[in-house]
Length: 223
Image (cartoon, rainbow, N blue to C red; front, top):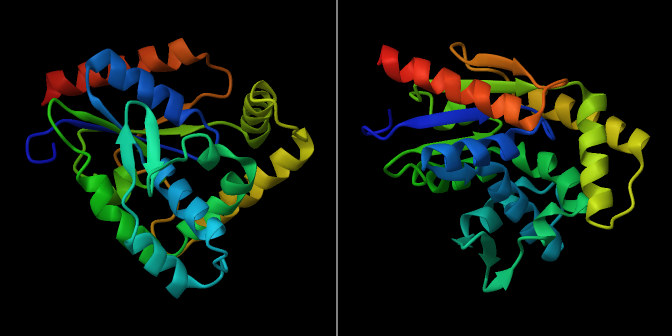
């Protein structure tokens, strides 16, 4: 619990489906939902828009410290501009892990993430929700899937949005992002020691949601 607020964390690599599952679980429980990845995407979009060198940690940190995104009715506003769709562009997706490795950026976004925990509860997805942001969460889930399966999912998402995509390039990009995320010095991608591991490679969305809800019921009975 976070100050008596129940929190469920779902961590995992890019395109593992954690966002979809976290949103569905939050809806089922009537909890708030935190898409922590959106914050890093916002920071990345902001940096790209300002022409900031993604290797300039100081400039990236300063920019992140000045962010004041607004989440409103399913939309994300940044400086009064709707960036809901823009942060999902592949250019932003592929650059986000470069921005996320910067310790100053992570520190700047930490408070925004912690403040998302509100009654009646929170479902938070990301890379380090269970290890760094909400280590006290009673239920931590670490979702995995093979890079190929995740690339196929992303490929279909891009085509549905009318964007062009190359499956082989997506697979290679995800493998590189996995490497960066797992090897970064600050908050590397890894399951919390008490996390439940869930390989979703061959599971449907409803099946995964059902499993997480079952684990939550078990967790409540033990608390």
